[in-house]
Image 1 (cartoon, helix red, strand yellow):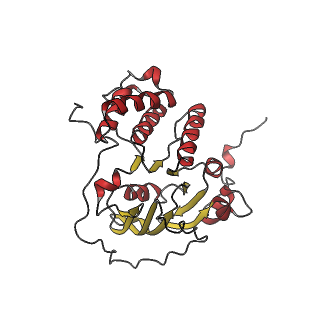
Image 2: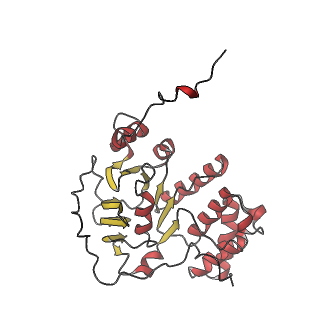
Image 3: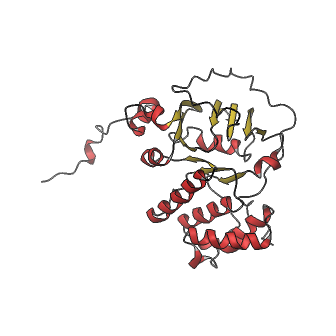
Length: 298
């Protein structure tokens, strides 16, 4: 058994459902969400992989998420981009049951997350920001533990653990304690834990941060294959070029609001995704005031 003084593992089912209906905050009105680009409707007869409505979250006096509405089509590779402090991580945390919203609803493949948290979370694979793991287990033990927690039998868990260790290039380090892993290795073993039970929706917060280019390319191939097989991926990232090449849909978030959502081509228009992002978000400054930083050739 893992030690008692470690943090909850990635696959922990999380908090129970909210008691009673969730109502919008009364201190300020919910703004009318008017995205610059409207996202496509879900295919007729099929529910979106993720649908959030009126999602709010406040930390003290700071409103982190202010009435977000968003639909993620089933079978899509969906990018979520925004500046630091935009509300991406808070939105993803509420959308996966890691954080209870102050107001709003979350549905995963048509099921209410907060009404049926255990059933819905069984469909999710989550790589949260600042992932906390049972790091006194080895990499192999951690993936095995995640598989067993999700109800897989031991033979299936063992087979999938071997496959995931190979895919993540962690076979040589399978017997090493996770506490001794590098930041990139920790990200990879956490992703393996999120994949082991074959979720219908995979939600990844900055999955490529600190991961080397070769491993990042392997992970992209794994995720692309997963989407082709019918899965849905939501990934947050600050790397616009990566999102533009990897994703087929994207939403731009800033100030707790969705500024644009749709296919990548719809959102970027005739510009690059990075240029469109800068145009919508603003805040670009020049370095003209740093004259002292210039070196002299004398």
